Length: 317
Image 1 (cartoon, one colour):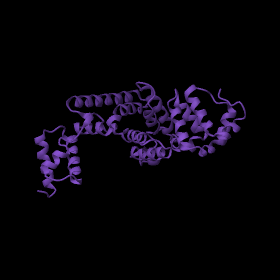
Image 2 (image 1 turned 180 degrees about the horizontal axis):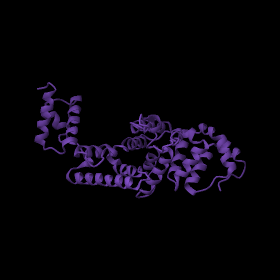
Image 3 (image 1 turned 180 degrees about the vertical axis):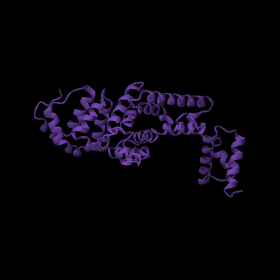
Image 4 (image 1 turned 90 degrees about the vertical axis):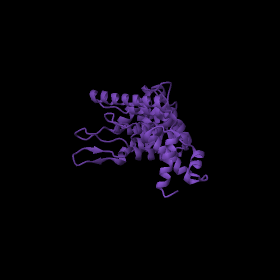
């Protein structure tokens, strides 16, 4: 039982961060919180606003790498602390409609967090855990009731990625952490366009290229995001992702997917087009990269021919 030697209000008044630390101990050690401690937290949670962003972020990270971060997050949200330090999390709580046509996004996110942890290979992965917790924070802002009685969340991954950036900047996280977590949130839904495996090789290349070094984490996040109780649907989704991973492996065996680059470098582009260094070289480089993603590797001769054709189509000679 987590308690304080003296009155908890005095302890929390001296340093409000101790309230958040209680949630961290729930995550790390599995403690239950004494009723008087819980009552004091609920009353004094707004005082967390006094604490610097850096101290709050450090405590949140320690909470997330604990044994049961979902339990710590839940205490944080239910007690009112979440409304101060991570309001977007509590904002995901949604009432289930009478027809159960959508899930409670908050509980779903905690389940995804637990399932992502189960997929970790070598100890706690803080980036993966943050992404699992935050992957659906864009849903409340994009929720729409459709004429057929259903509920939609169109583009919630785009909105969610922006929300992640805003919140994590406020918490003074590093640029790398913000970039990685927001990119995972942005990409977590793309797999559902794979459907019955009809993606072109180009689409698979783009998936790999956009994920970059985050691809192993994206694999885990997408698999963890399957929380349906329908066993057939769950098996179908996992089998579909198995096929996508097989496609990625097959293409990787044929092409260097980890380093997709244009088939001509900047110096070659300048030589072929007889132009100096400048913005036009960058435009040509981007065109060749798009071509590489669309068609796969080209020979130097093929790339040169395509580049000259593109250059002439823009009115150049």
